[in-house]
Image (cartoon, rainbow, N blue to C red):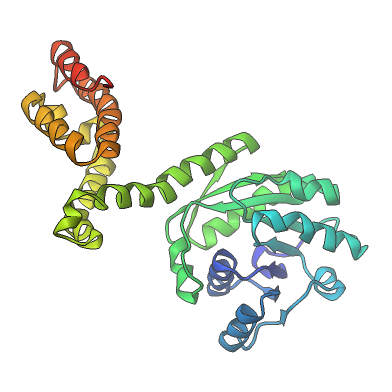
Length: 298
């Protein structure tokens, strides 16, 4: 039985996630046997930066035969075609650990091709990778990795997480899907939300990015308060938390004239904020009812 770090790894796909993981594994003294990248631009970039790496532009029998671990780090809709390509080589992959980095797909997409459920897995970093850079290896620092799959794979994945300074969370197929949805809300939709609130009536006098710079310390402080609080509602502040009905009325009057979308959104989020304020016990039921009446849809 090889030691974990001595297992020969091949990574298929050197996009943002794959390249960051490759560099983190190299930094952690893992035995990277080869890497495969079909994009000519990425291939040439990596070849220039990683001169000692055995780099290929296609999946070959040599690569699969000589690998103990195969990491598939490509777009979700390309994973199945990668599995088909490996299977077409008619190589016995029994005992080889094969896993992918998809957020939404499970290990079943691999095990259905190779009948190796104990050795198949998925490895999902709860992190955003927004560019192709060697420095993105640092984005693995102290993040959570959702791991799902067979028993042999899970033992290997847990050790990888420890070595690259991440925290593994074992999930099942359904939990993985739900975490992926939550991650979309937490990252992609957060960007859309911030763009939405900054691309507003103030643009008559300020650019959207300037508005963001002004409120950025408030956003960071709020997240920090949430992190330090026992419950979400402990971090709550603002007019609803104070029961400041007159301020809420003024906000609604202003928004109704300026931006109907923000007017509706303010009321939608306001209803949830009332529930948080009630949990915090900063307002009573009587005050909550008065505020709810303000938020009724016209």
